[in-house]
Length: 130
Image 1 (tube, rainbow, N blue to C red):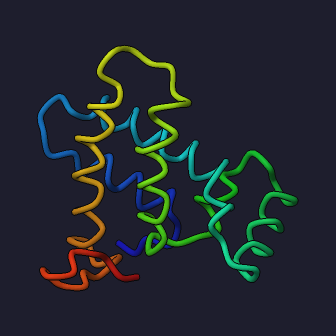
Image 2 (image 1 turned 180 degrees about the vertical axis):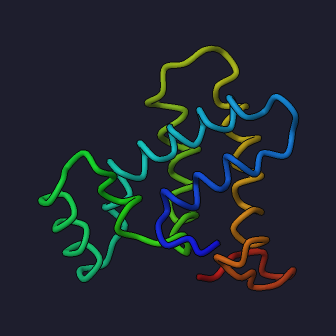
Image 3 (image 1 turned 120 degrees about the vertical axis):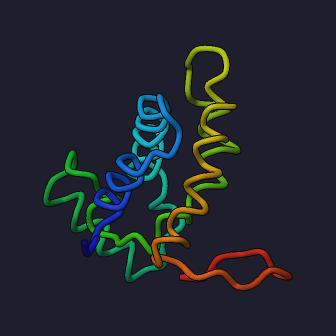
């Protein structure tokens, strides 16, 4: 199955949930991540991608302004700020929301590499490459 947008990749990630009973948790965290990406990830874009994002917002503000025009190779770009800022300072949820988000995001970091959306730099450097 070819995946062309972040939204499609996130749907596949939710469907691929590995733990029994983890589906609702995984789906909830993914929805929060989508919300973060669609509202804040534009701040990290270069000029060309920023123009592309602005056109998507002008066309349909509610249609996933970051997650629809961009592909899964951009999936991990906002993860640090999502966990380090958005979940901690913005999300008002039940106790344990941050821990749940962190557990799901550990899987989310591995999953696009396993699916071939991003490549690893290698063990010593520990990063990912688009």
